[in-house]
Image 1 (cartoon, one colour):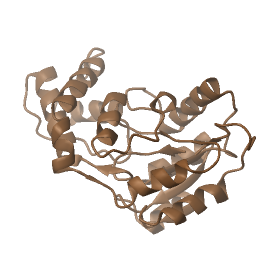
Image 2: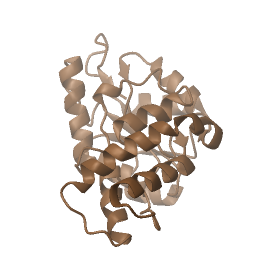
Image 3: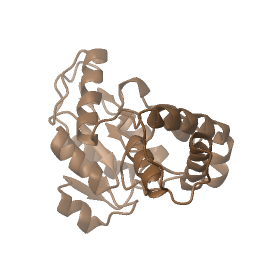
Length: 240
């Protein structure tokens, strides 16, 4: 299972904005006036739009410098995450319940850069069941659908099992997550815990739409119903 993070598992928007503001100041020497909305996009894309809407002409060196500064700024603020953010309803129980399914491996497909993704989940003790080495992250300059395929490739190399739409499930809250699953090759469970409505998620093509993660049994049933195991005797047979 490839989990989206923001507004699917956690909400840490206040700390994220502060970290972006600090990174922007360090890279450009100017205060951040407007932060480009996330809208399910990777940090790499948000950085370029943020530079543009603040009147900064992007150069080749901007992205690596900004992402490096963002990682440091976010790490410096990680103790604020649990105080000023929150785990989404049911996130912890859903992760635990899915982990009990035979052969399931859980990772993330997120627009957040890897270091910050780890901080976000650790702040709420949501990292225990996540294999961070086979995920897809926001510093990788790929469309999210391609990032999904990158994550499947990493899982195949690590676990020795091919991953396709038959045994990969994405859980996310935005229509972009749904589109990535449809294009990249995965089943899709959408949760209406973010800014996309139930109707929008269904129209985008989600296989199953849940109001949130508060019913762990419902989440497990959705995963099991969408996933065809390659080999029930092989750990890692499902990327769910």
